[in-house]
Image (spheres, rainbow, N blue to C red):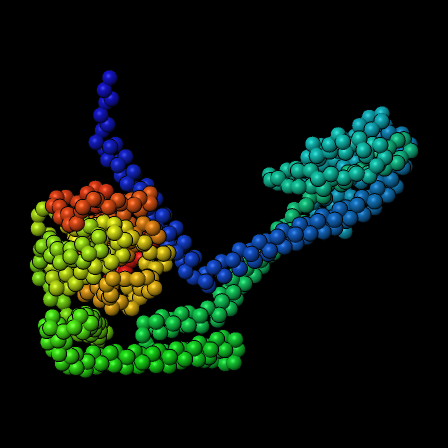
Amino acid sequence: MAHPALPPALTRARIAAREFWRAAFARSRAIAAGLHQAWRRSLQLRVVSITLVASSLLVGGFAVLVAERITNILLDNATADVKQRLENGRNYAEDQINVYTVSYAPKLSATFETTALYLAGNDPEQVAGVVVALQADGYRTIEPATSPVGVDVSPMISDELRERVAGGEVAHQFRTGNLDGGTAKYLVYGSPVPTKFGQVELYYFVPLTRWDKIADEARSTVVATGITLVLLLGLLSALVTRLVVNPVRVAARTAQRLSAGLLDQRMVVNGEDDLALLAASFNQMATNLQRQIVRLEEMSRLQRRFTSDVSHELRTPLTTVRMAADLIFAERDEFDPAVARSAELLQAELDRFEGLLTDLLEISRFDAGFAMLDAEPTDLVPVVHRVVERLDGLAARLGVPLLLNAPDLPVIAEVDPRRVERILRNLVGNAVEHGEGRPVEVVLGVDEQAVAITVRDHGVGLKPGEEKLVFNRFWRADPSRARQTGGTGLGLSISLEDARLHGGWLEAWGAPGQGAQFRLTLPVRAGDRLTSAPLRLVPSDAAAGAVVPVPSGARLAIGAGPVPETVAAGPDRPVDPTASESGAQRTEVTT
C-alpha cells in the first residue's frame, strides 16, 4: 500500500528543520574546532583557564565549608536561645499552675491560656512570632493555645516529641508550618512542667525565618566573594602570564624573521630579570649566528668563485693537452706497445678530466643562479629511447640487460630536452654501473598533470639513510668498491638541479639486496605545481624482496605499450607524493 504524499507545506517545513539542525551542527563543530585550535595555540589561554578552574574548585569548596559553618553556628545560637527561654518559661508556668491542686479546677484553662499568651508575646523581652503551647495529660486534655499570628501548632507536635516530653525529657525538633499564608521552618522545643495534679507539657515554637535570612545573606556574601576572588585570580593570572608570554612571543617572531633571512633582527632588553637575560642571550645567539652565516656565505662564495675560475682557467691548458693527446692517440699504432697503451690511458683520463670540468662548470652556474631553462613541447618517448640506446654498449660490457617500457603514443611535455636527457643519462648510467649483472628497468608513465620516469636496478641497493645522501656532491655509496667506469660524483647533484629548474621531483628509494629505484617527475605544463606522480616510487616487488632473474642472452629489450600494472599507477590510481614510502627519500623542488 502506497503511503500518502505529505502536504507541500509540511515537506518544506521538514526540509527547513533538517537544514537548520544541519547548519547548527556545522556551526557547533566550527566553534568547537576554533576553541580547540585556540587552546592548542595560546599558552596564556591554557594558563588562565587552568587557573580559573582550579581556583573555582578551591574557592567553591571553601565557600561550602564556610556557609555550612555559619549555618551551624546560627542554629546553635537559636537552639541555645530557645532553650534558655524554655527554662525561664517553665519556671514561670510552674509558679502560675501550682496554685491548683486538681486538673479540673474551673480557672485552670484560663490560667493556661493566659500563661501561654504571656510567654508568647506579652513579655517585652520575648521575640515576636514565638508560639507557646501548654498541654496537660491526665483527667482531661487542655488543647494547645494558638498564637496571635495564627499558627496552628497541633500538627507540629509529633508523636515522638510528645512521648519524649511526656517521659520527662527536654527535647526539640525542626518542623515546618504555615505562617501568614506561607511556609516557615520552626524550632519546636518541649519540656515537662511538674505540678501538684500531674505533669504539664510546655512547648515553644520559634520561627527560624530570621535565622534563615541571615544564613542566606551569609551564603550570598560568601558566593559573591568567591566569584569576585575567582575573577580577580583569573585577571591576575592573565596579567602575570602576559608578562611571561609576551617576551616568548617576541622571541618566536624574532626567530621566524631570523629564519626568513632577516639576520639583523634583535629583541628589546628591558631590566635585569630572567626575561631580560633570555632576551640578551637570544640576541647574543642571533649575533653569533649572523656572524657565522656571513662567514660561511663568504667562504661559500669564495669557493664557488674558486671552482668557477679554476674550471675556466683549466679549459685553456686542457685544450692544448687534448690536441697533443689526440695527435699521439691517432699515431699510437706506430709506437711500441707500452707507449701505445700509455696513449690510450692518457686519452681516457683526459676524457674523465674534461667531464669533471664540464660538471664543475655546470655546478658553478647553478650556484651562481645563471642556469636557465629552455622549455619547449617535447616528446619524451624518443628521448628515453635515445638514452637507452646510447648506454646499451656500456650495459653490454657489464652484462646488464636494459629493459624499457614506454607508451605507444607520444608523451608531450614542456621541458628542456637537453637537461632531461642529461638527467636520464645519469640515472640509467648509475643503474647500469650498480646493476650487478641484473636487469635495469626504465619505465615511462604519464597522466593529465605530470610525466614520470623510473629507473630501477636490482643491485646491492642502498642502506637505510643513504637515500638521503645520494644527491650530495661527490658522495658514493661504496668508495672502496672496484668500478670499471668512473664518474665525477656530481651527476645526481646536477640532475637534482635540473629537476629543480623544471619544478619537478627527483626521488630515490633503495633497500639492501633489493636494488634501488629513482623517479623523475616533471609537470606536463611548465610552471604547474606537482601534486601526484603517475608512477610509484617504491617498486611493487620491494616488500616481498623479490630478485629479478637475468634473462638468458638478453641485452636490450625496448617494448611499446601501456605501463605494466605491477609498476604503474596511472591517472585512475595516482600516487600521493606526500605519502610515506618505506626507504624513500623525496627531494621536492619548486620554482
